Amino acid sequence: MLPQRMKKAITENPKKHANLIELVNLPSTLREFMGQSQTSRLGCFMRVWSYIKANNLQDPNNKNVVNCDDKLKSILLGKHQVELAELPSLIKLHFPKQPK
Image (cartoon, rainbow, N blue to C red; front, top):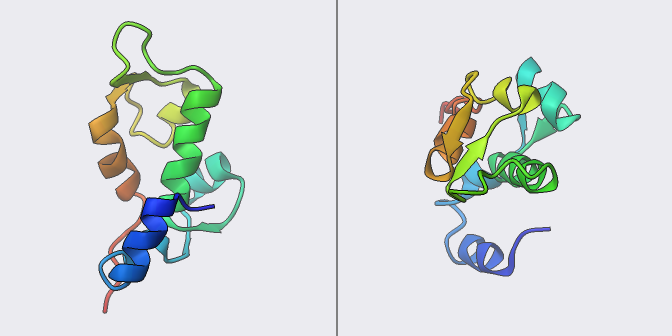
């Protein structure tokens, strides 16, 4: 399921990427969007990206901008438009830092 370059990066330095692939319990808003109660941050980002592509939510004039529908707004702080560079940080907000 993971892209080949991500598999390579994780196997070369597993501690650095552990927070991306660790399964966590999802908050209710994200749980409704994902349709499951646990996932990793990477899995969540991949699901959001596939949702964007499947529903043609990228702005046709500027592919670096996503036009959010109601379902996507619910997990991206109610924003109408989000830049692609901003997307990982908005998703990360749903995954609180785990104490060591």
